[in-house]
Image 1 (tube, rainbow, N blue to C red):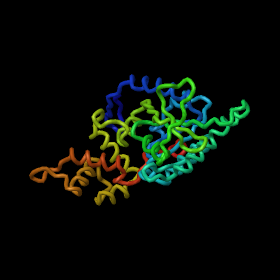
Image 2 (cartoon, helix red, strand yellow):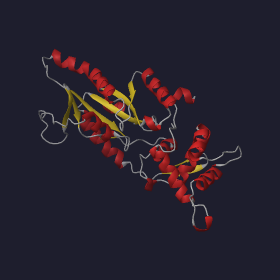
Image 3 (cartoon, one colour):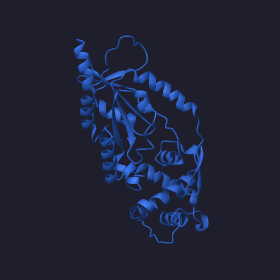
Image 4 (cartoon, rainbow, N blue to C red):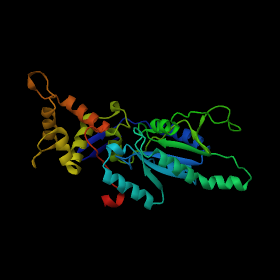
Length: 295
């Protein structure tokens, strides 16, 4: 995929076969569950969502969860939660690393699964558990969330009729079972913005995109959205006439990214900025706003 953002060509080596395989696996697993939890990156809620998911899950209940909120802009996180709720989705935020919001998620899953249980009760089935699956793009925190939900309780659920091999079920609590395999959704790159957002947040391996171009666009975006925070994080003075290149050079000097003879090591600087943003060391930033806010 090659597209242009802000005058820079952004290229990703992408193989559609990955999406096809992931879709087949997703369809097979989704048939087994009642509730789907879609885990999104709070820094890029739109780009980390998969447009195919709603079509795949059909009438099943879906819960939208914003993860990595500790690295996102709190105000924009609330704006996104409001947007999802206005569009009739159950939406909440979690911090999988610290466990924040996990109990609220369990309650939301139980509530979402109640209509399904009621249908089974009318058929005379009283001991049916709610079955849930967590899906999301790579590196969004699915496995971490599953571990948080399980805690110390990793008891295996009883085998389901007709399922002798394949998906493993674990008990989350009374009347609640989790498919102990995170569902990987490969996103569709409808525009260069999606590819850029996924690249700088760590959803795509660094080997398949141009890091220099990605960081150039990232610095440009942060200068527009969060100039004060960028200045404070790297302890640099920003001037109205600064270009992206001069800002990157100021960062290199401030952080001592130098080669022999005092020459600026821009390659090291690029890697540092990308790493700092991915890990949240650079600050709490959100690259996307809800549609109405953008408009």
